[in-house]
Amino acid sequence: MSVMKSEQILAESSRSFEDAIQKAVARFSKTVRGLRSANVNNLSTKIENGKIVSYRVNLQITFQVEDTGGKGKKKKKR
Image 1 (cartoon, rainbow, N blue to C red):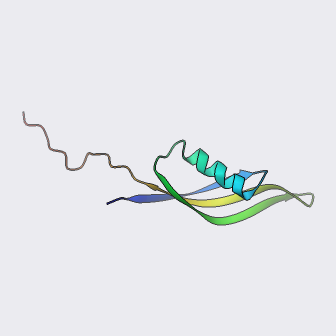
Image 2 (cartoon, one colour):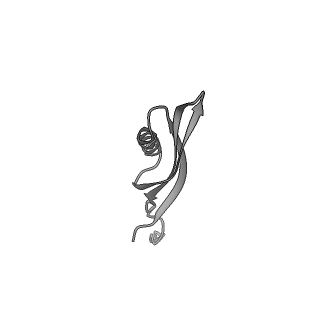
């Protein structure tokens, strides 16, 4: 049985929403293994002087929890 966990993260790009999503997944995958999915919770923009200057995404990223192998191990007899 797989156990999954999810974390909410935020990312930003000056290029596009898609770029912000790509950056978020790439950065999160540097420290967390087993990524399985990303759900976009919210999209927003930052506007200055009437122009969009950045694209922001709020993502819920799901990943598989690794088995540590600690539970169920037999103790060595002395």
